[in-house]
Amino acid sequence: MSKLIEVFLGNLWTQRFTFARMGLDLQPDKKGKVLRSPLLYGIMCLTTGFELCTVCAFMGQHRNQIVLFSEALMHGLQMVSSLLKMTIFLAKSHDLVLLIQQIMAPFTEEDLGDTEWRSLNRRGQLMAAIYFMMCAGTSVSFLLMPVALTMLKYRSTGEFAPVSSFRVLLPYDVTQPHVYAMDCCLMVFVLSFFCCSTTGVDTLYGWCALGLSSQYRRLGQQLKRIRSCFNPSRSDFGLSGIFVEHARLLKLVQYFNSTFMEIAFVEVVVICVLYCSVICQYIMPHTNQNFAFLGFFSMVVTTQLCIYLFGAEQVRLEAERFSGLLYEVIPWQNLSPQHRKLFLFPLERAQRQTVLGAYFFELGRPLLVWIFRTAGSFTTLMNALYAKYETH
Image (cartoon, rainbow, N blue to C red; front, side):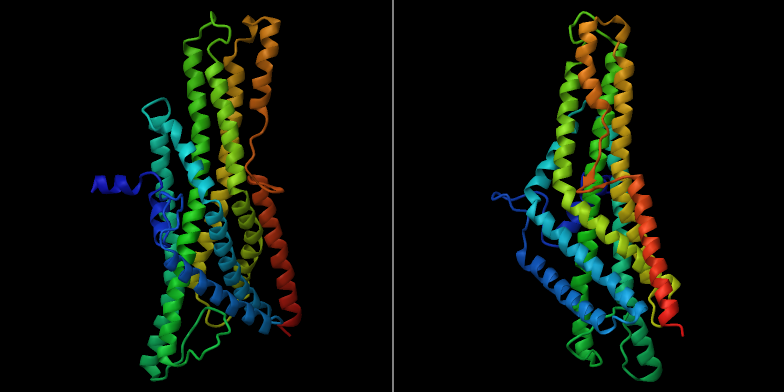
């Protein structure tokens, strides 16, 4: 049992599992492609696109009803987010695979920092598994709760009146049992795509951010080891290897930013309106509200935000800790003026803030506050419009 748990908490197990459910593999084939089952992936994308069109039609028909419009907007935004993330993932799959390899490279052998990396990686995979359970709970509750209510109503009244928590304008009549069963089958593909794409892409970002912060910690441990056995006889005081590793890590951070920038941008833009729509479902409830789904979905949206922003914040803090430690290690009092000038260059670069960005957004705690404020402003506006036009 312990070996099974160890496998589950291994490198990228959750990500590999969720991507495999969509017909993808993080290990590219001989042609360098990660898409192993185009048919399965195409069916998921087509069904999601179809449901997105029905949601947009519903929003157009009920554009004057704020409550129904905001609920449909919540579902539509999540589908748009999933489709965009997976499109970007496939377009940048080669860069993402290379990024994973570069992050794992320093920890492939038993060296300084390897034990801590394994511990952090197990903890990260445990959090990824919990996040997957949240997404799975969201999908299952979204599908099964209406089906269960429909069956209970049919058993008590003998009338087949489908209950749905999905605000869509379908081109077919779901009051027919066989059509309703077909629609449920379509929803299985849509909800599987949501669950797997959200879990896979978001936790992959979190794993890469964890890898960057772990590499900064590894550099800090190397600095502490150099301080304990300082070698003043060398012209570089034994720090040249640290500077080379730091330069490599800075390039890796830039590569991370260029690879994940579009995905992080989609997440930040969508999450503001998504949060507003979720809050509106609590403060402006209506009939047939699926509170089980809403509870799971609220946890997913909040965890999504934490993965991106707290992950970036952790990288920034580890980089700051490394720069402070580098200043403490260098024996400034024993250096000649010429050596002091030379060491100022890497020190100045190390003290420059390390930022994970998304175009004109800088991920971190300030952005978290901005998102909450923006979502709160949107919610206040919609609540005021609801009170003015729909409660009289």
